[in-house]
Amino acid sequence: MVVGDLIADLGSQDARIRARAARSLAEIADPVTVGPLTACLRDEAPMVRQEAARALGEIKDPCAVSPLIAVLQDPSFEVRAAASSALGHMKARHAVVALISALRDESPEVRTSVAYALGQIMTPRAVQPLIAALGDPSDQVRASAAWALGKIRHPDASAQLVRALSDTSPHVREAALYAIRQLKDHPGD
Image (cartoon, rainbow, N blue to C red; front, side, top):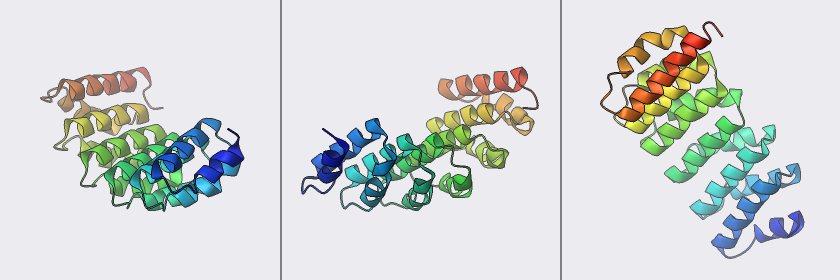
């Protein structure tokens, strides 16, 4: 299929076809698809919005950042998680404030995705919110926050990461160990 056919499929009556078209457009990663995929962020079907967010993250066009930030308020946690992941993949620095706010999302899946995205963006601005996320009730969020702090490599996180080595979750302990190694290997980056 060519790009034009896939874009036409975004208008199908069948949500599965629309979602599959968005997924295929992500693989092609042609900037001409950014507009149609951005429009899909308002689709009635959550699976279409989710695939459109993922596709926009793969394409990495800066024009998609603001619409993806808006999707962090979507009613579907899967769509919010996909949008935060896309913003991280794009290393969208001007999404940091919205992502930090999304660290308080009701869904642990979204908070996990947001922490990971902040680690991909690697901004010191996220250090304190990620340190706070080390106390999250979800071990997945705590592990993702520890990993993110390791990617950011900010010395302010070292004491909290050492404490995280005593976490009840082996995943959190492993992520904290990774982060501490990053701090030791790259001090002051």
